[in-house]
Image (cartoon, rainbow, N blue to C red; front, top):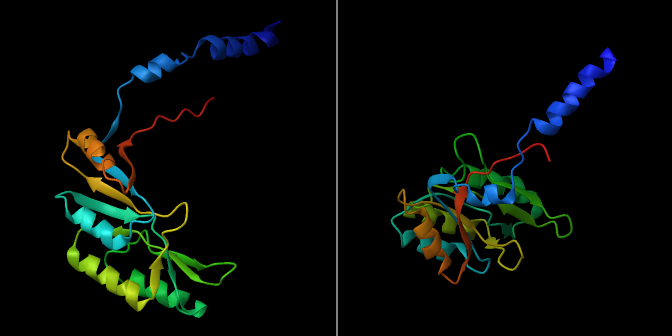
Length: 188
């Protein structure tokens, strides 16, 4: 009988010891997001030069632009050259992190790269990126389902929701959203 006491206590605690969230509790919770952060996904057909014009039309800081991808028409043995060339740029990495990555496409053997552009509100960096595209014979992939850049804007604190709504009015914007905090429950 004493042997069953401990498992019964554990069972009792596990059944009655946790409060279960209802859908109403989740709906009524205050939305929590990172102050000043707004993420904007641009449709694939909208090329990087137009993205630069778009970000330059605002006074907002841009933390980074990412998720664009490019193919190079250089010979496949130039992959490391392309990566080294781009990673030498001050705006293609963040210190020792987030370097440009790439690979050779398994069917076409074509160089494909995935840059993340930092401090890109700087017009000299924008010009350099466009020149680098020419030098490295990079073409932006605009026809894939996953094409398009995501811009990480910093807008004035307290105006995040206003800017999300403003960004959504542009026809080339696929979506705009707050940088929400998400509660993770490891127990189903």
